[in-house]
Length: 190
Image 1 (cartoon, helix red, strand yellow):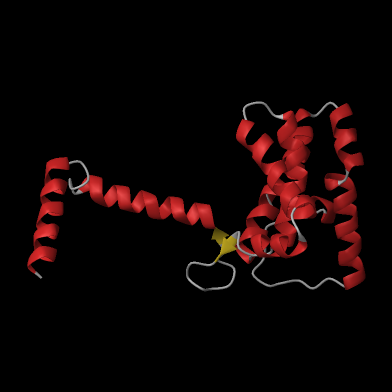
Image 2: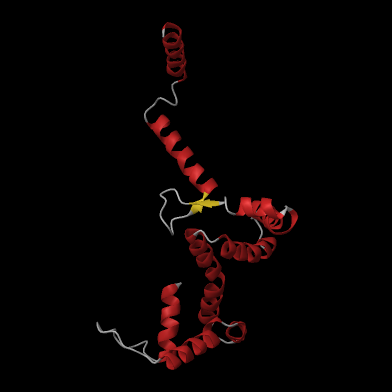
C-alpha cells in the first residue's frame, strides 16, 4: 500500500526512473503540498477511479481500486494499534455498508452493524463510553500495541490447547481423573 503510494508520488514528481540517492533532498512546503494535491487528484480521487474505469488500462483501474479499498484496512490496523476507538469506529461504519454487499460474510454483515449501532445510538451515553473504551487493550502496556480483547483471548486459548495437547496431558482423560483424585487426597490429608 505505502509502496504503491510512494510510486504514485514519484510518478507525479517525474522521478520514477531515477535511482534513489543516499542524501535526502529538501522540497519547499508549497511545492510538496502541490505534489500531494496532484497525486491525490491523479490517483486517489473518485474522479481518477472513474477515469481509469473508462480507460483502456485495466491494471491502472485495479491499482486505484486496491488503493481505495485497502486504505480502510491500513487505517483500521493503525487505529487499532494506537488504541484510537474513534478512528476505528469511522472505519467500522464504512465496513458496515461494504459487508452488506459482499456475499459470504454473514457474521460481519449482521454483527458489525449491530455493534456499531449499539455503540453509537442505542445504548445510554455512559454505557457507550464504557464499552468503547474496553474493546481494545495493550497486553504489554506499551503505546501503539493495542489489540482487541477477543483476539487476545483467542491467542491465550490457543496457547493452552497447544500446551495441553502437545504434551499429551490434554488428551489423556484417565490421567486427568487420576490428577483430580490425587488433588482430592491432598486436600483431605492437608
